Amino acid sequence: MTSVSPRQGPIRVGVVGLSVSGGWAASAHVPALAGLDGYELRALAASSTESARAAGEKYAVPLAFGSAEELARSEEVDLVVVTVKVPHHLDIIRPALEAGKVVFSEWPLGADLAQAEELADLAHRRGVLTAVGLQARSAPPLRYLRDLVADGYVGRVLSTSMLGSGWIGGATYDDSHAYILDVTSGATLLSIPFGHSVDALAMVLGEFREVSAHVENLRPEVTHVTSGAVAAKTAEDQIAVTGVLESGAVAAVHFRGGTSRATAFHWEINGTEGDLVVKADQALWFQGRLRLYGAQGEDGALAELPVPARYQRSLTQWTERSAEPACNVAHEYALLRDQITGSLAPDEDGVPDFWHAVRRHGMLEKIREAARTGRKVTLAEQGS
Image 1: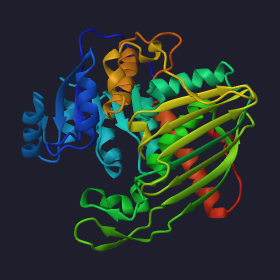
Image 2 (image 1 turned 90 degrees about the vertical axis):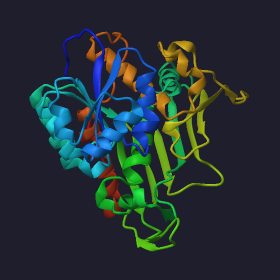
Image 3 (image 1 turned 90 degrees about the horizontal axis):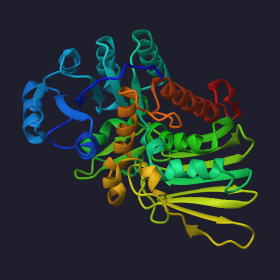
Image 4 (image 1 turned 30 degrees about the horizontal axis):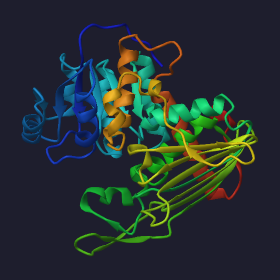
């Protein structure tokens, strides 16, 4: 990740996509920033001057801009946060990078691999620090899980299996999510729920070496939740990936569109000496509370594993609020703050940057290739 010089004073944040009607920026980013030292929510941009002014009044944000370009040019903004729909990322992130601002983009970075590569290359040429919102990597339970595996809790990892529901790709849609019916939007079951999840798997267990896949659209028509209108859907609603990790462990990941009455999210890691299990009660598991279980030895019974306090870092106020969507985002902001200020601990890895996003986009492209060709595809060139 590009380095930056330590700075004094709060990091002044400008959010693109903070709307008076709510949304992800309002439910996750605003509370996350409000609960952290070292940040000031200074500006926002919306689709028009009027909507920006209304949002500024609602959230008590001093500066309201009618375009992302104006926000990017402001000398009172250090960090540009992009929370708009994926198809607009390229046009909004590009001017922020050109202005030399630190950029935190929600995942996916671009609508496809080519867009992600363009943005990562521009950030590199401009020497700009970047971050991408793969917040599961910052979640205390997942960091603890990674350390348990690394410290040999399960011995040698033999296999892992992950089953999840993606919410995206269900039988119905509403006006605000009509765009995700189109596979070319870049906001699909594969890119968002699966992308977040497989990134977490790779963080804990390492990258895939090879994959085989089925990516299917079994609901080519879906129904509007209120009008009953039927719309065509080209985006996938079933993803089944099997493969081998770089460690040699066997992996199986299955994501279903919509929700399931049986299992929202279940992840097992099985090894020579024990087992670890991660559970969640909601489809978009990386936005809510996780429960971690473990057992060792032949006769050991699964028991819940409390996350040690040190994994909360200095964010103890979020310990009892882990079910809120802002929790993991707050932990990611804390890491980003320490990177920007030059105070990241030597033994801590920072937040994923745009080059990391390129690798994850590349992995998803390989999975689509495996599904399209029906052949096993090697991912070795994606790096470790």
